[in-house]
Image 1 (cartoon, rainbow, N blue to C red):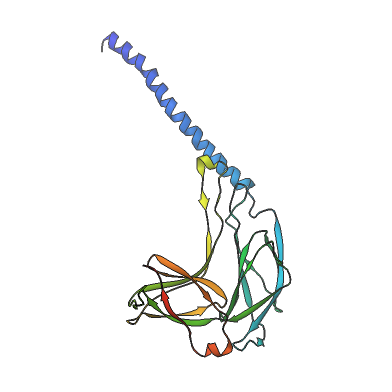
Image 2 (cartoon, helix red, strand yellow; image 1 turned 135 degrees about the vertical axis):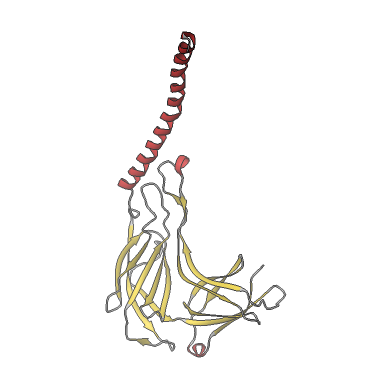
Length: 255
């Protein structure tokens, strides 16, 4: 190698290194900033909103005739609608609440609207109660009623039965949207976590008929077929209606 070539190569080396530094240093700084933000969120974010509200009450269990029966072990699952945000995590919006042997419960939850799912351990009796800060949340009187079976017939807009079709029935709640990032313009993470209290799938028979069991009384459901759905309200049944499955009649879902 001539001296001229050696000098030329030596002169190019610092330039190449400077370009590498211009690329690597910003990448390293951004990575460090991202890690620092995650660490900061982990250290200082609150597991719940700071404001809470008490919920207290008594659970009674009613049979098919509306008569009170002896209390049996019961649980409560709470789903709060609060949105996750900087310094406030949405990961803990679900929790279980204890019910004592007398049917009493006493707890605190985030001061946001929430759904309370009450259920006996044998899953025969249940209720879903929606609560919010602008209504009384103490001294609640909760009545658990028997779950029941429903039947119906899936039809199209012309009333023609749809045979061999997959249908689903769901009872769920969805929380508010929010962001879990300190810098939403850089690392936005929008979430709307939900809770499903009931979900059943089945296939209609040759006449379009379907059956689903263990439905909660007095609760709104989403009934879906393919990618379309409608809301259905499941009533609180009268005593004589428990003698056979509750018939929804013809159910039409736009296709």
